[in-house]
Length: 441
Image (cartoon, rainbow, N blue to C red; front, side, top):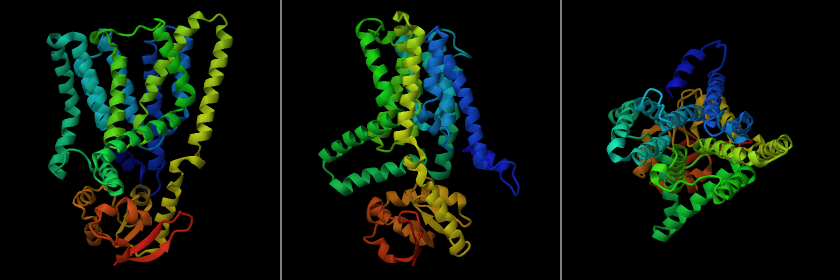
């Protein structure tokens, strides 16, 4: 957010050379280029073959999932850049050649956590790995030093939140989780069985979606199978003791914890939350390819066939799951159309409210309040108290909503039975799939 504030300050104006959104995307491209350099350095630790390392970079740079998610205008590219840097520093620590000592990787880990809070789980497993590798006596000073410097960039963020908003975490970290948990009770009741079933269902749903969007069914499954076979034959050594666990495997445990936290506990996941998995996929491919190609006579022919299969896999993944016509973000244009309709047809300066406020707020010429709690602490507080309708009635004049926001998704947090009965219908925006404008009476 700090980066975006600066971009808007210098890129906005009456006649900017470049719009803020395009400036943000160009910055993401630059970050991705630096990340690719760091990934190449990481992959070099797992193979001496230039060809195998290049093949791993193909997996990284041409994966449609990665390209889509790192050019989404969000924090993904920054978090991924810091993760790649953190990963490389962790490998240097494992090699006994730490860059700047344990304090430096701590600072990088803290900045990575600041970019995305759930990335802090990678810092956590790294600290545990230090203790496992060096033992408690020799490991705790190193872990303490890294954790202290990791806290340095993060503590001001927590202090700011606590001082200004009386909360440690942002509303965005809890609002959707609150609604998803409320919906389980709303739909199925309060039984423990339904709660456990929801955990299993949501975890499986997110795992399936994650596998589809990363091309894992066609690409990863083959390499995971090959990795398993090579492990069984002894070509890949499996650690027998905790102190033998490589730091890369420890960091993969961090990804597993990240997935569990978002999919199984918070019940709130987006595909870009899991983009760091591509690092482990690239490493897996490099390890497997490096071993297999030592035992293949027709290396050039085999490499060409494998590369063609990978590119075909990426194409199939893109055509089935990631094309714009099938992309879940293709509907964002309808939200822009709604904002422009309100600009032309509603009174100037009238306060608007929406549960899909991001794009509408960007294009709105009048104040627009976020009602889903993702960027509005007061709306989130009202949701937790089941007083969202009172908040709307006091602060909003017009609503841009879908009816299911009232009849289903946020039904349990309004605090009244039939909010639609208290609204005056104004219009339905053409071509938006039912987005309606209401006046709050």
